[in-house]
Length: 624
Ligand code: GLC
Image (cartoon, rainbow, N blue to C red; front, side, top):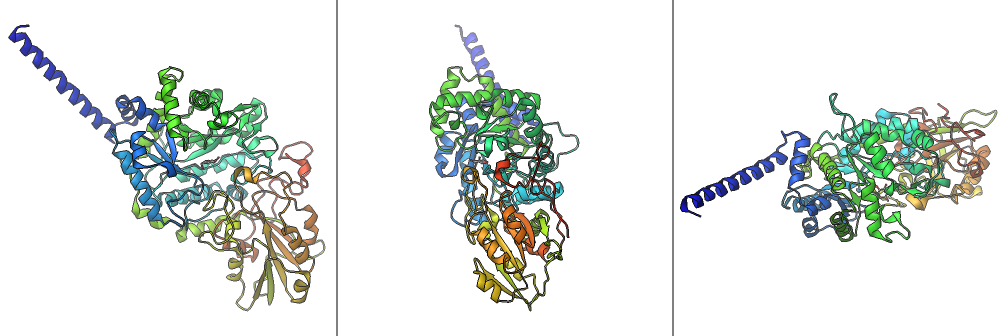
């Protein structure tokens, strides 16, 4: 080759190098440029990603296995706190913020600097965090029939979740619980899908209101005071046979679409950023492997444009025993349409399985592209690239008085009055504030952990002063006249009750906390010593029974002895709300979100069924 030719080649090479640099730098500018349209940013970033970086975005791991090195080596796209998983016992907001910040800085230090998204089960407030406002569980919110209240609670929950530096909540649960024997029935707003549909306004609270001209079915998160939400669990989790958790929902297609699907349609229309797949099966087919319902229906028919996330080890449970033939589970779930997998521990196994399945073209690249683009879309839309780090100025939102007042309002509106006065006698409620001497009895009267229920500080919840809040007894004491003597005895004997000259008694009993399968229960009786406390106290003095439970329980045998009966569900940290209504500062307005059966032999029994013979029907609730 002559000198001239060599020079020309040199110039050409130099020119092509310059163009490549320019192109790359413009690409880098493009995806990091917030003025660019989201779809352009997604497209340009995706082009730059290696297969490993793409698989990393699809991988969600638990915080206990997350280290900066792991985040960098595996390009991890998301981290979660499992139920109760906190940086330390009673961790402060700052401790949470520091933890998330350290993880995020590691993610931002990767080649493309894609921020990870940290998720947590903020299902009734930011309930993992000590000192957070704990709102009534969804069954109580269903009793309020107040979507605007639920939206306000969503907004408060978003602020308290951001107070700990976290931008993603695995909420709301929009299950339509059709059998109260299900351990998660308290996470469901109602047996009636139309009530659940109305309560999907929770998404608007968590994420923010959708702008008028916003594209339909696209994820929307307003900004750094909001969080990405997660409609769960898709689909039919609340319809499993006998309420057996993670089991089989046996119903025809029309029934699935008419009862369990509508809340997802509404959530998507309200811009929900993610949808979590249910552990359960539909007519024997695991939802985590159901391509027709995930790709065919959710993504194509409903046009959902956010990302689909698995449940915790949800793909492992496609096979039995769970984790058996894991490669098959990875193949079946990803090809069914799962975008992000809550692994949450075996990230090396997940990563290598996906990589080998893609390289073998068992998982087509277009499936990976769909998954990664959906995840990136949500991260761009919610501003995570612009604001990847926690905002410490929000730390003081955790447990704020404004939010506690909101929770107290929710407690008031959630209470359902089922009985008030025996035949031929005056109603007992509202209670007299200046009675000389009253008895407060029961295992749940002075137990914050019991009144909060599961998913509180730890996964299963627990007994005692587990966080900041007001017990029902404390609320009563601060409501009655100073001259009134309040005597508290958890489990008094009959002679004591008869001998003290009590004007009346308030008996607070119910279920101990539980979550998920641990709450599955076939007999639904009031746990001991509740029934005997009721019979002892109500047999000796006028009484109102306040039932703390995640669902209707067997009460028929005890109702005749009661002067009044109140369903308080799982009210959360603001027990004052119960006293507000018992003593008449506010009236009873709650309506049953579920049918109250006579016996479990009647179950499942829901409004609209033939042979509908409840003790108290769906929608029932006395007023004062
Ligand atoms: C749980 C629940 C799900 C929760 C997830 C993460 O098993 O099924 O509702 O969001 O795991 O804690």
